[in-house]
Image (cartoon, rainbow, N blue to C red; front, side, top):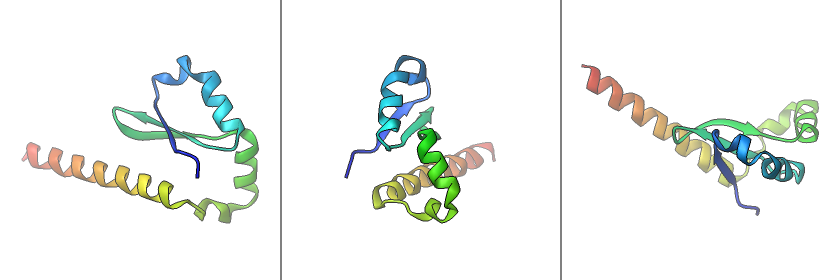
Length: 87
């Protein structure tokens, strides 16, 4: 399996050509903001494929699921810490 590509949002301008090459190969690029998942960039062809078959949204690899679960856990932990600090 190909390695998951993760870049900060600030890299978009500097690495647009590289991001485009990656997405043109059919792979997504995960963009982060302040260390947290912000966006996923896919090619127009991949987008058309996904929107033509909505059930494909549910077909995530184990690595994608682990990455999303980690992002959610981090977000939940940050929210819990922030709420605790505000009390």
